[in-house]
Length: 243
Image 1: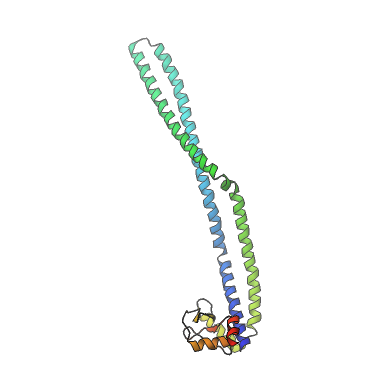
Image 2: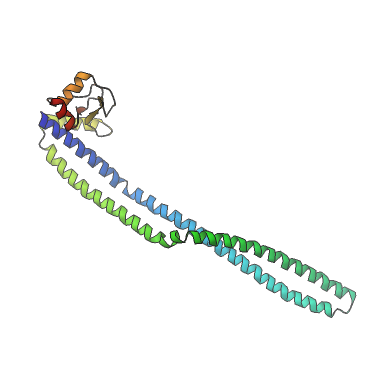
């Protein structure tokens, strides 16, 4: 019976491996999309700051253009002032000069604010220069590593499925049927559960001392009195108990 029980344990370990690998492959597209999204978020944050910088520079250039235009108007107003022929022309020129000078002062103040904001964004982008310069290569490396991981999982799954067939086919028909029934009935696919610290690791129920002794002997198929799964202990522990 020890041989059959060891086959059941090996089968359970293999089935658990298969289950895990199928979960990995089943979630591969979602995980890859999440990985791509993670890098896209980094790229988006960089583009957003770069766009802010470009916008600030455009706004600064617009203000500088307005100042240049106003200076032209100011020169014209100065000429009008010098050539004023009456009080009305003089006052009109003065009001225009005053208005233009205020506008220029306002634009210059706004430019100072833009320059401060530009410096802050340029500093931030400078500090993130390494991230910006290596983002594409890191993304490609991460995706390539992920693809290798998935390909490895496919290979391991094929090997595990082949191994499972070899083990399952050598089980006595009655044990194979019991195992299959227990697997189908459990949500986690566990039909053979390890006993650790005197408890079934499938349902976490403490086993009676006599049951623990019988499980360690590995002389017969012992099932959990709570969840009915087949119980076993690791080989070294069972051998130590038997000796």
